[in-house]
Amino acid sequence: MNIEELKNKKWYIQSCNATPIMLMSAAESAREMQEKLGFGYTEFLYEMEMDFGKMCYRVDDLERLGKIIYSKLDHDPKYFKKIRALHRRDQKISGKLFKEIDSTDLGVYTDRELILLIKRAVQAVGTAVGVGHLIEPYALTIDAVLKEELSHFVRDAKDLNQKFITLTTPTDISFVQEAEEALGRIKAAKGASREKYIRDYISGFEWSQNSYAGRAHIDRAMIEKMLLEFKPGAKRDMRTLKREKKKIIKEYNLPKQLVARLETLEFLTSWQDERKKYILIAVGYEDLLLAELARRMSIPIEHLRYLRVEELDSDIKSLAGELEKRRTGSIYVQRFEKPGSEVATGEEFLKIKKTLESSESLLVKELSGNAASVGKVIGRVKVCTTIASLAKVEDGDVLVASMTRPEYMLAMKKAAAFVTDEGGITCHAAIVAREMHKPCVIGTKNATKVLKDGDLVEVKGSHGLVIILEHA
Image 1 (cartoon, rainbow, N blue to C red):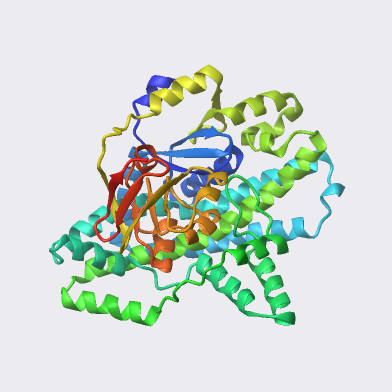
Image 2 (image 1 turned 30 degrees about the horizontal axis):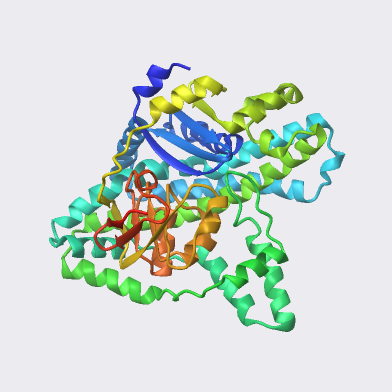
């Protein structure tokens, strides 16, 4: 790889539990966007270590696509609704594939037929993101624009954050909240009713703990474990929320164009939640097929997930040693002007990683980000970068992560507040924080680098501030 070329590009980084084949399957959405919308991403970079990954967007891609989307909306205010309808239609083809997999014993497929099925599953993951991948360029760049516009009407900084949070809080219930309500029904029920609710939960949310790192099968034992840690949250009053929105709009006499943009952001939050469900279902099926391939080839699935998509057509057994090496540390680059991708391991990986890393000051006294959910909390930091690290979160801790995903839910219930490096007002952490009524500061850029386990911090959700009171 050309290290200098990579170094000279600006990257927006999203980190999560992930593996290359899952992330790169999702990134195939760039080709769907180009084909169906006429525009798309040019390149992604991935840094992977032991099933934790960084997906790096080119900043100039986000800026370029954001301008295109702003223009589309100016000409057609219903543009997002039309693309969401197209996105939903695209999922029907994937649905047929999933039914085929569910109804067939995978053992009847020849090795070649299984590979072809995996390729179709790769395409299904790409389609799950699909044209909906235009959400990022808009959502990641519009927050600051809207907040600046709103500041012309709401002058006080604290009031501005509170009003912005209220105006952008979704009035639709997320699938995370639906799953919580389903758990609550199980907790309250007894006898036959309890058994029915458990079956309903498994059939309705069996995909909800999946991630880009693979499947997380939900069974009775997992549900019983979740019930032990279950804490019912305050139920959101959607009618009151809608009234509050109308009151703010009237009180500050907000112009129609600003109100329309705020409503668009709320629409995207709902769409993003729906898209996440499609993704989690699709990666579950892809991982199911990879597990069958791993069994046949006697290669651990943990290694097989480090395949590049194009390597499905190669002699996979001969790559066994290379895949194991990639899991310990690798950089992938996926460019869309041509098929295929590049991968670097070993010394080359370490050089590129060092080149891309930015140094952070450890003398920082406070971090600033974006207010995502109001409130003030003092607690000890727990920095979580992997699924395994979530186990250290205890009641009252401040959960610090690059970004959160559905598999973080058990830890988020225990935590008193959330702080993230990345994300906009439509991100998972922001949505869950508002549903749980917990303070949340997002988009700090460097919280996971500056904060350490045991640091005592004050999270001021209304101000978008994290104040370091005591180093561990």
